[in-house]
Image 1 (cartoon, rainbow, N blue to C red):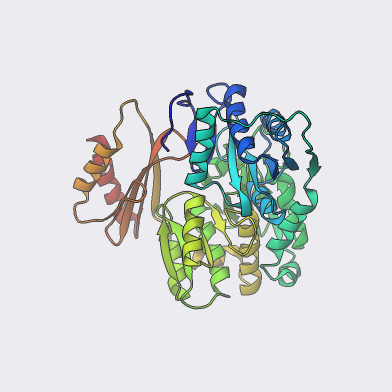
Image 2: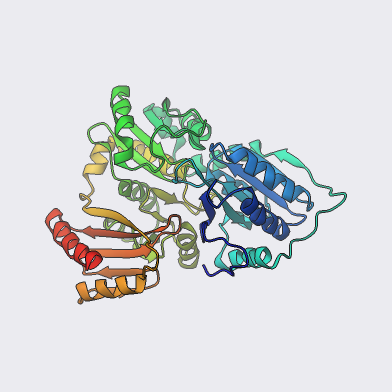
Length: 458
């Protein structure tokens, strides 16, 4: 995103995912107040929803936002510790003008962020982000009111409405009959209370692990199999039927199975998709991003559905889902998007419910359902963005390294050779660029990775 440098925001990540940074290295009180005042100006006099994850910096950022919004006459629904999808759902359900989720998602504890939410629960569009930055850079904030008629109230009742909306998309009776034993690792984050509440509504016996929401993150916050080694041991000891691991704001979901332990986050979406497509009309559209596994095409083909690939980022997937009237969508990072749920974005509660429903309807254990899908042969690597680094030069090297590939340039560089694809793009949330590679076999992946390495190193 291009921004005027009147204020030095170079230490922040400003993108379609909001604004984020390290608390003591760029996203301090001064910078946070700039964005809070600009957002409060956009929301002047309107109802606004605020949620946060468990990071220690969350409460003071929340109070800063409360002051900015109240001083401009905005009424506030305060949710406290809730997942990002719950905050988005409440904006929609309460017919609020907007909202903010205070969370840096999968980033480490020393990071935090403002995720800006528009009406109907959608993240800010590129145009809305530009409006906010224009207000910030031009210092055209509306003045604080002398007698603002504004108030703060709890949004607890709306949180339960989000849970009910998730339950309505599955067969609650069938799931309850199975009496699933479910292991949950919430990394001490925003899902520590809301997700167990959902599981209890579905009649599950819940084994809680890392569900003390103190924001210290007892394992790496991004729920990859590598980060879940200790949690995997606890899961196997629990003898649970299935396990779920979350990131700090509970919009990413990873599974544990009794035989495999923690599995790739890329399995989450196709399993949930299988449940949805079993009820959907033939020819339905599904949207995934360019960095998401072939597995979703495999499932879609079984149900005669069409797959559309969008740019990376929840807002981009949702935009394409709206345009194509898709019945389902998501991202390979464990992000499941059901348009029938008012969060209409990556929602771990939705993913959990759909996967449990698939198990109940098929009467198959999770290991059998995973084994019914092809093996994943994918590698995700990342490299720091060095000073003076040119992505254009890198893209040219990849074009030369894969001269016969189909080329898509709507989000970095995506190259496809039919049985393999490579996606190179800068991250929206970290100062790095990512290279994601997938092939149909282990040997093909290894050979493709050698070609990728030559492009990066040359």
